[in-house]
Structure formats: structure tokens, C-alpha cells
Image 1 (cartoon, rainbow, N blue to C red):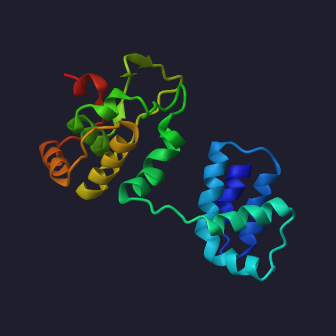
Image 2 (image 1 turned 90 degrees about the horizontal axis):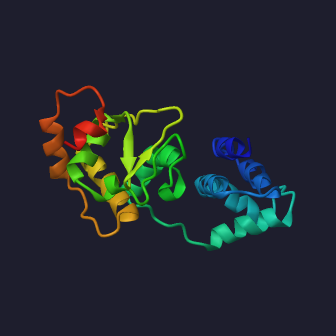
Image 3 (image 1 turned 90 degrees about the vertical axis):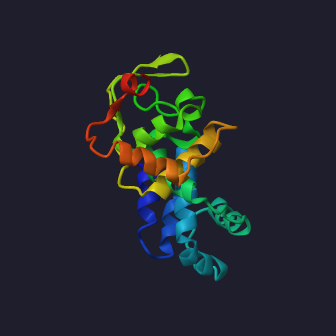
Length: 203
């Protein structure tokens, strides 16, 4: 509930957003709530920052004010194009730090799929993936199988960017994916409509 409130606050369009999302700090947080809080705070900073400086925010705890002031003095990291797409398209399922969700979404960290053949990854992003899968030599047991959706609506450069980011982040030492490689796979598989299966991709 707190996470939903933090995200919803970012749509208020007023300095009061900071008064709402900082209330999440009143109870213990986890990495998911921390991430959402930071994202909402950064997105609304132009709104609440002047009000904070003018002491116009009605913050209910000194810890709330301290959180906002620390955020202002800490430069925001500039996300790469691939990181930005990953946060929008990949993170909701594969979770912060790429650890996935047990029984639902497989991990990216430590995955032989991430470190492996680039063509397989491109196919998965273009058309999706369905069915059983093995990760790092172990069957990933899905309690409620959820197919990975296709992201073929992304253009070739966007797919190259996000896969290069994923491989750099979770498959250290792997080569980036190029726009030309994505175009080649897209052209070769343009008539395909169904998602891939692991068995097909590993033939």
C-alpha cells in the first residue's frame, strides 16, 4: 500500500507530493519501496525543492526533511538509454538487482541466458518467451507460469541499448548488442508471431 501511495504521489503535480511520499519513511522500508521513493522524489524534485527551501512544506518528521535535503545534495545518476528502458520494461518483473521473483519471474543475475548467445536474447525481446526454462543449470520452477511478453515495438536501437545494459549489468565481460544484430534477427524472424520456447532457442 505504501509503495502504491509513493508512486501515486508522483502524479500530484504539486509540492504536497513530498509531504505524501516521505510518510513512507515512518515505518521500515525494503529495497522495492526505497527504489520507488527515490524515483518519485527525483521526478517531483522541481516541484518540492523550492517549497522546501522556503520552509513551506508541512513535513511531519525531521527525518522527512533530512531525506529530501540529502537527495538535493546528492547528484542524480544519469541513466543510459538502456538503463532507462530496463527500468520501464524489465525491472517490474525481474526486480531491482535482477534477482527475479521466486516461482514467477526468473533472475537475470547469474543467468547463462544473459551471458550467452546474443541472437537468443534478441529473439526473446522481439517475440517473448513461454514455457519451462532452465537458469544456471537449474530448472526454474514456476508456480503460476507467466510468459515473458514481446517487446518488438521497441526499435532496433532501443533493443540493442537495453540488452547491452542488461549484459553489462548482469553478465560482466559480455559483448554489447548492436543495432545491426537486432535488425538482422528481426528481418530473419519477421513472420513469427508466437513467443519462443527454451527448447526452440537451444536447438
